[in-house]
Image 1 (cartoon, rainbow over the protein chains, first blue to last red):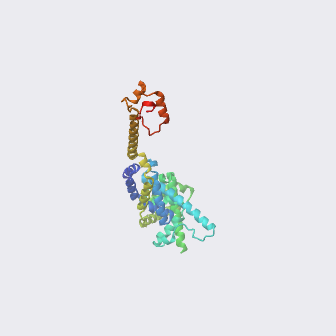
Image 2: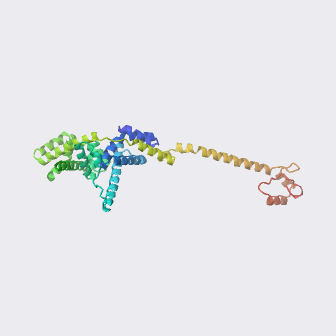
Image 3: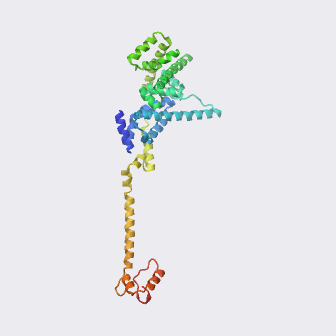
Length: 183
Length: 167
């Protein structure tokens, strides 16, 4: 997988747009899924994924191959998601300040209510996690990245990765339990 | 959990994933035997790990590849080239071929025009001598030639009569 990625990256760097298309095909599903849980909205996740992939294409010349292409892609996607979340929170705060009564909860309830209850609760709980914990948890438990890959993608030490995953899961458990008790 | 328990956080996380080496697992088990908080934490870690993995399998996504590639192709079409194209000398040198060809045609045209102009300067006088020779031999007076040059236009040629003062 990684070798095939590197070969496609090399071709894409030489101007072969179809090679980059193959890279997109390989990684788009996982990327959108990760972003869907990061930004809690399918449409936004697709927009952020598109933005991240275009950023990746335009930054191919900066890809040194020190980490895998997948890890590098998650790094770009994480940054794109952070920017998106920051802007959305700013917008919601502005709307709240203007007296707009729009729901401030992150995520679209209408989308997740179609899912089974347990997953619905989990999604809501994920949306309430601090971004840094959510990134680490998603990359490990949803995307299945190795700890070293997560450290590379988030550019943090391995111990910090383990700590964030631990605290993220613990907080998730507390939130889900609280939701069940509220019923 | 106690401050001492914090030392076991990496082991608890990896144990929940089933990714803890045996040696570290043994040390963790010793701690778990006397720590109810860490035992509960490990159970919670496992439960969340299982739930999240199931959530991943259940999450449907729509492909964005077509949108991305359409955007990139439109961008490449709008700019006519991508940065990688610009770095490929074979691409831009070949693209210069029409420009070089056009320049060659212009240069050839200018050269031909100049050659025709030169021909007029070596045109002959009525006596059959080249103008330059006639000037040397005195058939054309220097003052006549100077007068001609001062009064002529760009379209004039040097093929008129040389007698009586004008060429």
